[in-house]
Image (cartoon, rainbow, N blue to C red; front, side, top):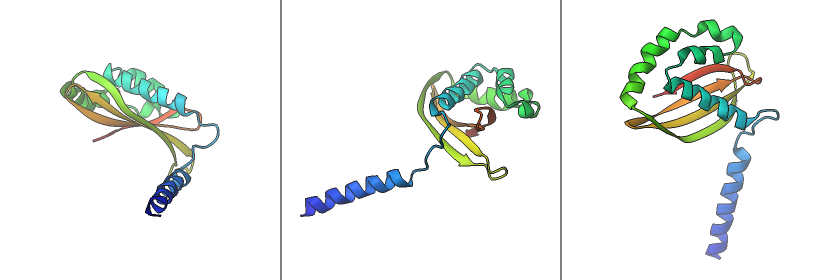
Length: 136
C-alpha cells in the first residue's frame, strides 16, 4: 500500500510539473532561437562586438556601444580564459513588462577554462535580437 501511494505521489508530482510549465507559444522555433543565442556568445568570445551590434533588431542597433561592450567584456573574457562548452542551454518565453509582446529568452550557461558565466539573449517574435545580458 505504501508503495502504491508513493508511486501515485511521484506520478502526481510529474504531472503537476509538466502542467504548470509555461508552454512555448506556437510559431516560436526553439532550435533556431538556441542557435542564434549561441551565435551571439561565439561572436562575444571572438570579441566581435560589431557583429553583435549588427545582429540586433534594426531599431536597436544604434543603442549598442561597441566600445562599452569591449570595456566590459574584454577583461571578463581574459579572466575566464578559453571557452570550453555550453554547459546548459534553455529556451523560454515571457511577456515583456513594457510592451506585453512575447520575448524568447535563451539562457546559456557557459564554461571557460577558469570559470563559468551565464548569458541571456532575448529575441522578439520575429527572432530578432533585442537584448543580451550577463548573469553574474
